[in-house]
Amino acid sequence: MEPYLEQNIEGKIGTQKYLCTISWRNGELLMDEPESIGGRDLGPDPFSTFLASLAGCTLSTLRMYIDRKGWDIPEIQISMNLAQQAGEELETTIFKTLTFSGNVSEEQKERLLVIADKCPISKLLKGNIIINTTI
Image (cartoon, rainbow, N blue to C red; front, side, top):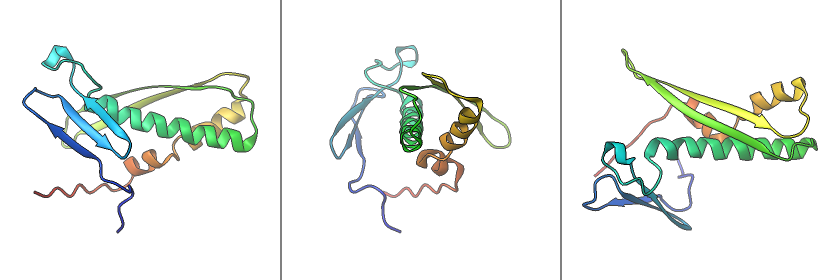
């Protein structure tokens, strides 16, 4: 199986609690935790970064579909959060709310809901994920 990315995502942490530098092919991202739990809030926390990835993928997928259909929807907005419940297995629910500018019919909204769940990150999350960690 070939890796999806041309270059690996790289990360490092020093002695400052929670502050991580994540590098990708074209830049760096700081990740941190909020001050309320001991971080310095210098960047998004891992959960925010995770949701940002899903948000960006959902928005891009919707934009491509809307453009291909020629619909007059100039702006798409997304609001996201998640909740977790411990039980026999950890259950995570992601809450995603989409809003559109312009006049969007009920039929278009129904189709856009289906398309939103077809973005590659949504498919990844709904599939079988194996995390292979090595040292």
